[in-house]
Length: 445
Image (tube, rainbow, N blue to C red; front, top):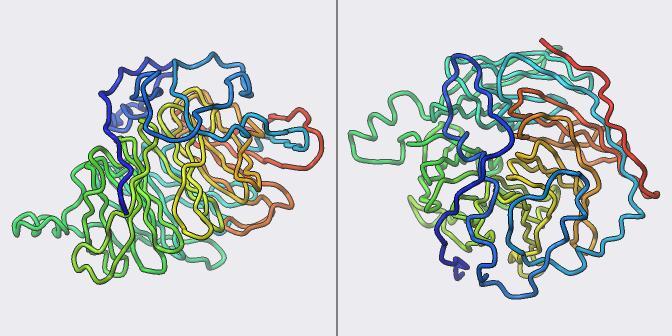
């Protein structure tokens, strides 16, 4: 399939953000810190876009917060109906039910599964929290620090660290949850032997890992890195079976659909779609299409829960772009951009018909997807004093991963201010009322 790439303009200077990233004493600065500060598009305002259709965007006056307007931005292709969404039938209430501050520095990663929340930070500790009471029940420790990405799969925990390695734990439940470390990816010595032999397949990433994703059916772990590559690891023997030269710039995010399709996002302002062909030998993953993100570096990706029919990309200019999968052809078509954040979108999560986005503007926004594919913002979660770095969402009345919304949804947000928050969001069908943001308790330890 033909690529949709367009030429990239030179980068524009980024403004100085209004927040300060705090680094705990003794902790080393991380290369990710520079990427968090980008808050505007790398394409100058008024530049010509190579996209068909009317270029419109919901006016900034429709945002829910009183924050000052951001620098000049591009106008992106969205449906005119996006500016005419009727919010009178939506009734959304939300409140912070817990805030926890540990001596861990910045919260960098969150993963949720089977009534447990895992959080990674600048320290060498991964904390495990039990739901619904949200009490700490275990800790996973290593010598390495900075847990930059977390993924859970069946009975295993995968954690990527700043040393370009991934640690694997086996978890079990016998009255209490237990974790046993079982592997390190790559295995010690593998990348040394590969360097001597001149092969790169077994070598570790040459830059910090930014994201990991799991294809359970194919027993594969994907790791994306700032070294512009995505590595494919076979979980059974923790061997690297392929290195994908994915982008021309740093790869910031990777997600995999239930059908095995791989999506990667990069600072080169594109999202790329890859398919795996088992008949192609050492290079089974092939590029099928490149999706431009309107000249803005893409920092995070998410697929709509359940059907995976919508692909979301959070960008450094504050917009969440989305692509809709055709019901017949299966091809992705650009759907529009969600406007509201004033700084870079750093994380997104999908649950049911809702999308939750976290931003460097210290807020999280909850979006509802209508039947016609349009979106509207139904809540703005405010309370953090620093950029929202990671986010997770799941049904409140069920274990994470189950689809039921009778009691609304629970949202976990981790911030560079070091605070971990839990929110309860309930959506109804009556006239919208004011929302409560009172916190039930605050744990400072």
